[in-house]
Image (cartoon, rainbow, N blue to C red; front, side, top):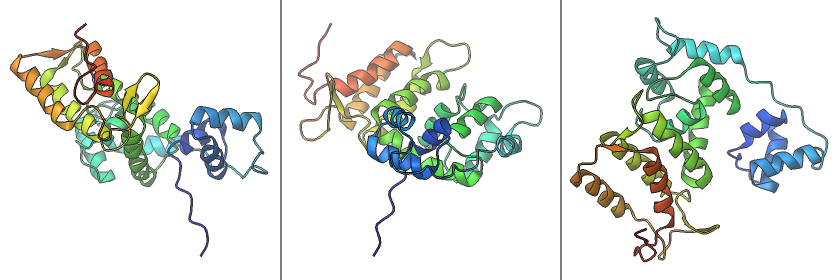
Length: 257
């Protein structure tokens, strides 16, 4: 039996987009150097360290992306809105309430719930190396895994979700809106390593000595409801993630100050 095929690294499309390298070369550098920025630096320092470079894949087609965008955008507008979003999700075979759509919203820089601009669409899908519905379907699995396993990526998506979910013109996020998004993100992050407990500069797996538990999320929601909190500021939204990642399971390191 031959060797098993290496699992495609989640950052390979971005590596190819930045360096114009082939998928094979991207995989080699990412397998060795693990982190995207380190792998890119290594590529520029010595692009042929794994041998002669392979031919790069054809560039992502802007025309193809525009055609897909236009098939879902409003007939009387410039953007894809709610109706187009629902049809797009149907085409991808994904529930509109699937947490992976929050990662897509971050990648495509969606300004708010159910709205996608043409420029954000083109730039985002190009960065992910996708110019077809088949490629977009494939990207869903990669992004879903990355959102669950990668703390830095989770934080980026989490931060964007606040701006994405709040109503236009509002500085805060309604609590009745924040709670469902917290529920989606926290549950997904706890499936992988995205919400590993952070102690100084060290990530600590959430084992028996771990920190935040799913039951604590329910208690947080009960607290917000009982106190009749109407809105969540961005500072509160961001600091809550830090709290989740640093608190001990018994709250022994909680500081009232």
